[in-house]
Length: 224
Image (cartoon, rainbow, N blue to C red):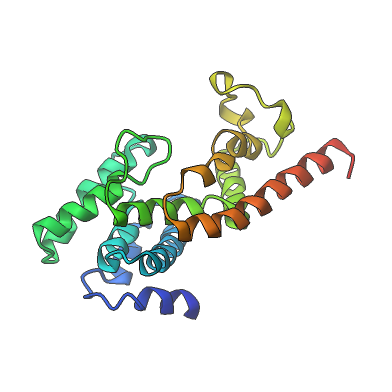
């Protein structure tokens, strides 16, 4: 971890319930877009947002470190539930009290974009959601989209943004490209952010990301 990231994480000044080395090992089976590097970025951003918004930093830090745990036997579509349950058991062994464990569990359950059945009800849950979603847009969001494409043997590009089909006719498999991820998810994220701090950061990242996909379409189409 870089000095900048370590400083941001350590700035929580929270009890060391979660040892970084121990948590890192739990992410050994994570994919390239949801590995421990992603977790550290979300943790750093979560602490930044929590401090700016006056949220409970210990809760946000714990939730961020555990939010994407690759629990054996779980699938991506329900990973937030499996991770929340695993986190509850882990934090119980670390001595966190039950009400605070419930608080962390809610944060993790409510962080998923594609399953909004559980909405963030606390400031801390909103901080985690925002931090996680900020890591899906901007330059890092573009990098993660292409990393995911490579790991799933999908095409890099097959049509420009303005030719993507409607939501109910989304491509699948190898035909689902980073452009489609941008159309169906990434360009919609800014509007879902909860905190003023995240919306300010997100606006700049959104603008950069939109310019990137415009340039990509131009280059792929031969006009740039």
